[in-house]
Length: 91
Image (tube, rainbow, N blue to C red; front, side, top):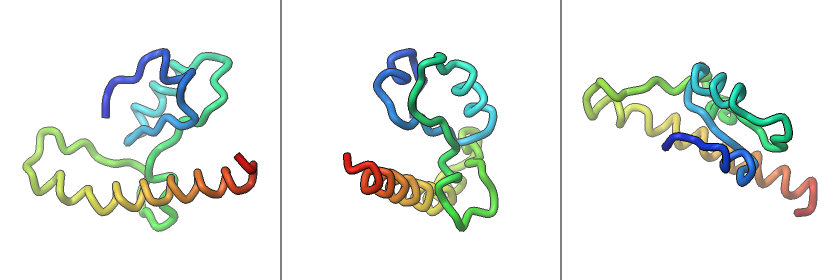
């Protein structure tokens, strides 16, 4: 993860946030011509019981480790979404 900057909107098809606060910031920063998508990672996990990844920054290593399965499922779902779109558009 890193801070986004203006070039990300020109260079990216997807900008993925972990929580609603960051997603709102990304969406408000996006220029009018942004053709990509801004979404939460867990929007791509159909089995997720929640939509946000909590920030474990002030917690211990176990809190970070506990997030790995959710992150992996979200990434897998995002990859599946990208593959479906590529197959549909033929790109």
